[in-house]
Image (cartoon, helix red, strand yellow):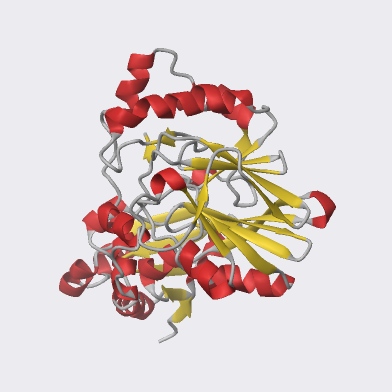
Length: 375
């Protein structure tokens, strides 16, 4: 047997660098159809392990390339190893089983430099390709801030250590419903200050610093300015970095806009969403770079794997920013929405400090794609 293993990190870097990647996903078809690995040069087939176990690998062999690496993935890394062995036994070389499966794929964070800030500062975007989540780190003059952190905090700590900077502030744009925030954990373990918009924090069970409109926070030579931007939640707040970058949270994406229904308040919050998108953001410069907290598909990525666009470009190309009729807008963001995120209510309760699930449960709660956008 010549089956090898590949880590999610190695596979992520192949996908982001647009290498040609062939994947055999051996999860059941329902799971595959709901959520799978995507990329500009990714070819993927579904070969359920239950069928391989019953009929053997032969029915799927004609779909496999002869002279290309084959990556086999399952839910947690067990079935993929057996399926990879069967493919190898059938005469295929360079067969890899993905360590940890889709569970590990979902948890990987890849740091990408977005740009330079004044006086030698740096802005990083952390791409969670398996979940479509985006988080950020601002570094300046030995200090750092992290915004919309994922619960996997090691990648942030690694970058902090590599750059020898101290984490002083951790902020969330809103109370998240699709993923568990790592903000409080990072703050507590780093002796940093944790910030949460006050209007989203009415039921939280832990200390926090309230964020209100127009608050300003210094990070070395850089400045973070809070801009109240409700609509996804009642407290949703965007952060403007050095008057260059607009971190929009789950209000505005590259190819869509945020949904207002995850707290059961769609009808109440749709007006706030329209005001944010059609008035508050309109007052900003078109050259400001939009950095959202999520993306919906690989087509939203730039050449380097980052996700960003100028605000003026989005006002030209994003359908959600070009619905003139208010009633049509209301229907767009309240009707025919995609399914809500997995375990979204449990995630909200966890982010309020009301529930403390163990690591395995947290992983289970976050399984699947993000669904924070209006389609």
